[in-house]
Image: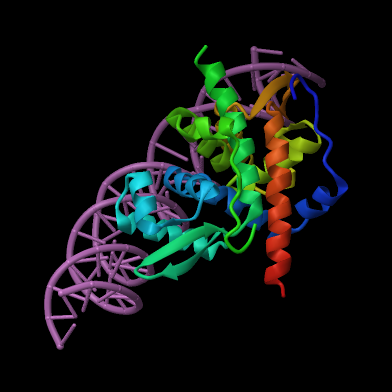
Length: 117
Length: 117
DNA sequence: TGAAAATATGAACAAATGCTCATATATTAT
DNA sequence: ATAATATATGAGCATTTGTTCATATTTTCA
């Protein structure tokens, strides 16, 4: 969309927009994706389920920081955990997350390439 | 996605994930959508371009608050402004925003309906 | 030119956020 | 039972965030 072109919004979507709870819930999922560490966690889980320590290695932050962020993601229903011996394995629990990340990354890739000249 | 089912991530997307700048840029667009006021602004602009005072009426916050948020959205390249007499008309400048909001709202609608029983 | 209307912006501040540190809990192996 | 490993969690803290208030800036109209 450029130069004054507007997007058609589905009727269904418009009905969602008038529902405060739904709008708030939507902002919550975007918030989950707005932090660098959480985004790394979720993108790692998009590829495959992983333990806390694996996620710690990927994200280069402390175990505590990972656990705190995983709790937030759990509370928001974006991931779920299952114990496997000493390890706790986390997995994505929402199919929309991968879609959002894909669209967000496509947007970002364009933005970065434009900015870099 | 449920019960251990994992999502296939496109090769292109995986290359994006290894680019720090792109990942950061992606978190920035999600951050833009993570605030209730900004989400209202962007969803209003999805339907049609609007002036600051129109947005103020829609979002039920002060003119100053709207202008501050519009500046943030402008700085991140999500909206652009054109003057029309005394008014300044804002419009979406990114086609991905509408897609993201649609997917986010679909997710939210499911989440809210599940929570509500 | 001067007043009114619309928008932008800087300072200040309370609230939220993400991290670290210390410590608790849970599981396995000795 | 005890130690070692993996994970969770509460408190504290520095930073960020979203808002309000006061004040600029811009445009129109009398």
